[in-house]
Image (cartoon, rainbow, N blue to C red):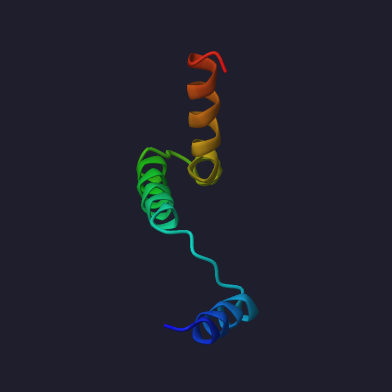
Length: 73
């Protein structure tokens, strides 16, 4: 492709709000669904299920925090 075609594609993606996250978005999405199923299946009340939803959203932050703490960074 020539430079003009590349620029046109780049501008189209920029206008549409698209970005290239690669496989990370898919991996996070699958992990979110898996965590959601896990927490919902172990929920005994509605509010525990709501808490499970928020845990499913936030578990990567806790994972990274614990990893960095373990590595003493």
